[in-house]
Image (cartoon, rainbow, N blue to C red; front, side):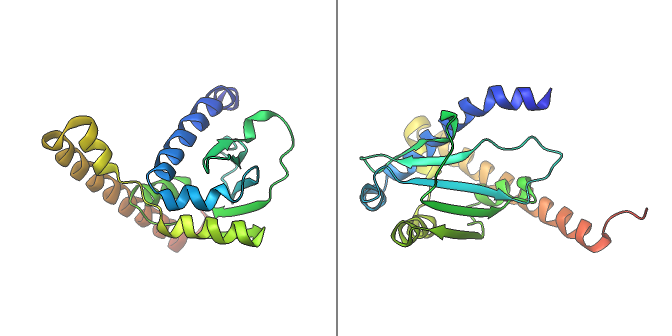
Length: 177
């Protein structure tokens, strides 16, 4: 049941994720300029250590467009031949998400085309989604500022709770058999 629900929702979620990523890329002209040099190359994101109890994530492969944006390439049904593979430790997906929401960069391993790897590394180091500015444009400063503060506080709290839970399970280890 969970796997069939995942199969139905994955394409819609991936399309929205690509919209957000392209929004962030478009806000920084240097980012799109760097990616334009890699037109038609494919970047694959591999989630290492993904918990087997969770439905597997969809193929996270993205093709660089002539405009320096990304399009999801994993939903095409064809085998992916990536020019660059970015491996992310995803053993704790909730902690990974909480850290991403707080603006922390995940630890990654990058393999493949050296020039593309350098530019992707630059993107990972320098791109930030200015959520506050987007909220300000949508809602105005009176509503956006308190919403942003609340969201930041929730993300920090979630990250702290997940780090505490992760530390607890590491200290106690698996239950005895």
